[in-house]
Image 1 (cartoon, one colour):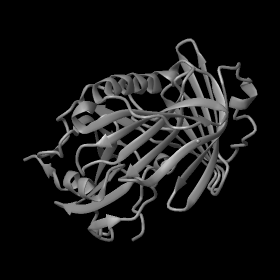
Image 2: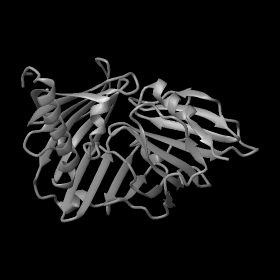
Image 3: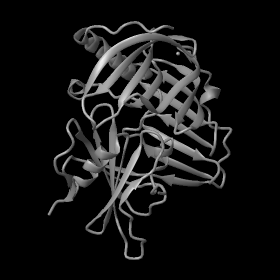
Image 4: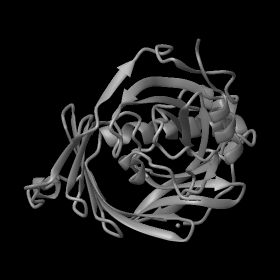
Length: 326
């Protein structure tokens, strides 16, 4: 089926010899420490490089520049294949430049994940959902890397493999797995870490935006439980992180948005009214790329779109758990 309308950023959204594994308790503690380093490294390191995204036979190459200046962070990500897109981030403010449509989208980063900054700070909940192992060491983009595995304890989530730069803790390669099959993968092909970043690499001055349309994707953050839309029992390990109302690309009205996570995977639920002159939504699963699955249903004249990096059975369980509080 054809993908339903999704947030523009969803488009952005949207190998040394292996050694034997350690005893589980030691391996878990070490793996947890590595996860902490993955989460912290992007806030401590400058880096510039080229990475490749692979999923479903599709390959997409991007160039990223990241600079840390005291408490401030700057990112520039340029997608080099397919439709031209450039994402610029200053702390939590993000701009997405779309030369093809001559539009600039502005929004606040909220649980946005861009390689290599893929993980939040892990909590002990990870132990409940995944077995964690420290595996072998490999060489990725000229850097020595430690590989760790996250093996799901149930069929509600995918497995993960992470290759981490031993010196800096920066994530060099990440793969989402379904049993032994790779669902999607990010990997640096070239990377410099810890060097001074030429400010020209972060500049957007070469992009002429005269006569471009400026689109502000406003977000209104809400307290948990404030939305009319709530969730019944969730799949094990998932918790609600946030509720908000958002302006999405291509939508005239604000849309309700709920975010869930199990500390590794993130799921978003978008709720929007179905107008009388709209084509009724077609319930069911919608194809996507890589680990992202989509499930649509209708409830009380509202379209419920559930999007997340989890298997189909999990995305349906979450989507079907949405109800309207009376």
